[in-house]
Amino acid sequence: MATEQDVDTSVPPSGSGCVECEAAGGWWVHLRRCALCGHIGCCDSSPSRHATAHWKETGHRMMRTYEPGEGWFWDYETSEYFESGPELAAPLSHPLDQSVPGPADRLPPNWEEQLDRD
Image 1 (tube, one colour):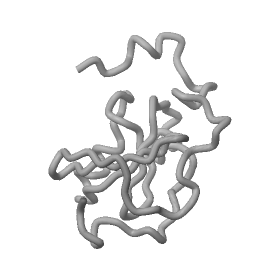
Image 2 (cartoon, rainbow, N blue to C red):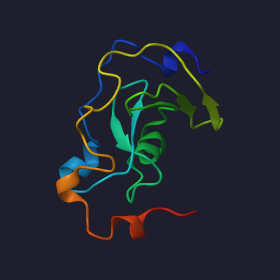
Image 3 (cartoon, rainbow, N blue to C red):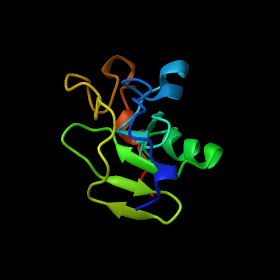
Image 4 (cartoon, rainbow, N blue to C red):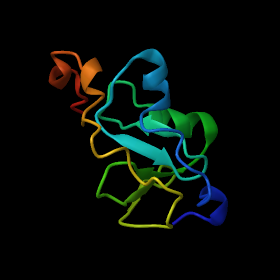
């Protein structure tokens, strides 16, 4: 796993949804949390891929899932997966009542057709 300079266990998440999707009225499939600054972005299956964009823009290489019941980490720099890692500041996931994908009121009728199939 990356060094202490790549993870800050004291920083809370930026919110309950993808920062950029929320601002633009977009939607996401799953959420990812930057382990350094707490930025919440959408996964690479989402139309906008904001978590990866955050890494490319900031160099913050470690991300943690922001899905309930999951605790894995991903290192963008090395493409390594870790089943667990340091305990980050709460909350560790989006609210349980938040839809996946979501938010439900912004999902287009054909959202499944828009998923990344790479």
